[in-house]
Amino acid sequence: MIRLILVSGFVILFLILSMPIMFVEWIIGKYNPELKSRSSLAIVNWAFRCVRFLAGTRVDYLGEENIPADTPVLYIGNHRSFFDIVLTYTRVPRPTGYIAKKSMENVPLLNIWMRNLHCLFLDRENIKAGMQTILAAIDLMKNGTSICIFPEGTRNKDEGTLLPFHEGSFKIASKANCPIVPMTINNSAAVFENQFPKIKKAHVIIEYGKPIYIKELPKEQQKKLAPYVQNIIMETYNKNKENL
Image 1: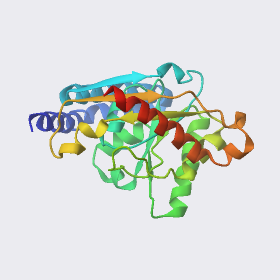
Image 2: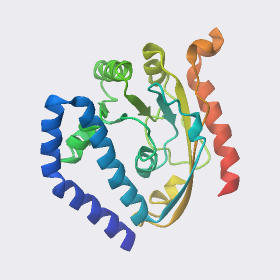
Image 3: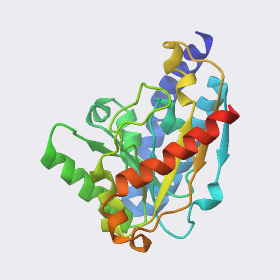
Image 4: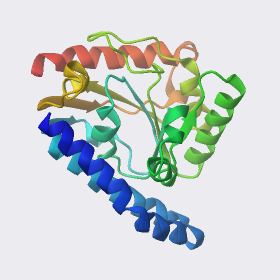
């Protein structure tokens, strides 16, 4: 339980003590939104690295050279843990908005940092609101911000399997004309979920696949992007679980 106390204590202190920084970021955003995006990215990256250290998590990051440096991308990943965001966000090379569930918008202070980082809140029960979120994500990508989404729609509790990927997630990349980067996460549930409520040391592997340029795919494959990307992630997952 020591690690849980350390991580929880750090997160609470960070959110409270960063309130003056939030105000400064708000002022910066009034005059230089791009600077605000970069500074918020740096601050939260530092906080997430501290959380990773306190949790005792060792991460092997593979395939980072596959992430294009000259364009925003749509990260598509499998989802097993609350720590998936913590462990992946520290490696994004440009401001990146994560698509989170609607309830996260109600968490005080955290919701401010999430908005600073261009995160979007998806209401899965409201189709019209969900479409507005997708359109907002497309606009962000067209303006240079990467987007990360977990198209299973929720944390998958079954080790070694993937829930069906929602096709709507892939419209973001096709409409914004940006590449998709498959993001395969192995063993992140070992940090917290497998022994809830304890946090334990764990070895996690995160691999970034080669970028997928939708227009370069055959027409039939373009119509079935979800199973195509899901298969890539499943193959990578099975390959990397042998190295844990």
